[in-house]
Image (cartoon, rainbow, N blue to C red; front, side):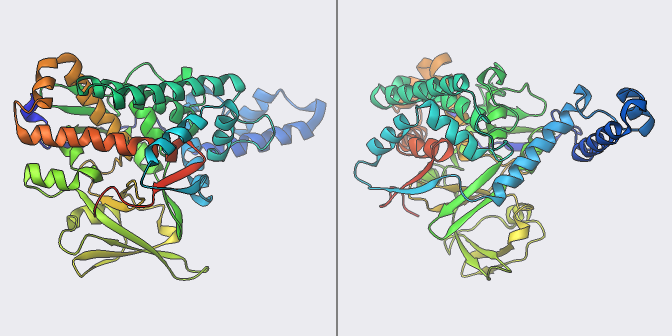
Length: 442
């Protein structure tokens, strides 16, 4: 089994149906028709038929019927993703000094563990809420999330200072605790911890070291975590926009995906050089530069992908940027994207500790995993090896099986320790922290 850790496996299969959303019913139109008919019925006064009879005569259905819940879920997802895309970043850039940034990040995580702060973050992230004083999370629910966040921080600290033999389990459960907080504060379909299904939401196959997930698997933490990333924020001093991920979330539930840890390693920017060394293959992560072009009336963005020597496969670019014109220049892909095209593109974009951007080739397109999704999967796999095959996990750590596997696994754990607090803060806090001086090379 350890020898399979570096095996690449990434496929996606259409199911021919959507397990969560109704893609055919016009929920917004149905609701508008019902509300208009309700007003008309009120105007008729005492002589009017009963409301159910009147609605039936008018051919109007009650959008609140449970039969239309899948259509409602799609409406909530799309409207919230669109509003988030049209809004400014819900957080503030926060540069941290390279020396001691980890302790600063941990202090910021501790500062987040406050029920009033959590309620403010919820309202800042969710644009479909009313603007009244009492809109948003209840104090009781904010307190539940507070303890999820505290548990996540304590488990991360335990992993950081504890022996390597038990690190993966601490980190996986730390990620799970933080995922609960993220799901409640950012997933449009959840606003209570108790609504999260009691399942991981995926299948892990230990012998092959790979996962199965998607619409043919029970919903759980992972599917809800993926559904929380309605948008990918791209945020820097001169860049502030987000990519709409509603399409990726709907596609998740109408496809079945297989993805191995070996492939996931190739999608982590911090492992870029190590992955090439241990496998002899290029990483799926490529440097990305984005600059604003045009003016206020014709805003556009120029994307430059590659390092001048290595760049993504052309087919991957075509899938990620449908109907966008692109060219090759100086060993890079150059793509011009108008503001109104941001809804249609589907690239995986990640930001490292220094807030440098990386374009990541996607082996399971059209499902676009977030950075946190990837780490959730990798730590889940490593924790499974640790728990159910302790002898094999020990042989990996002690370099007794394959030096390459030991090298990249140790590097993954150390890089996770360096970047996870920053990733969580960017997802959950009012801040978008980054390190002034780099940890990684491009």
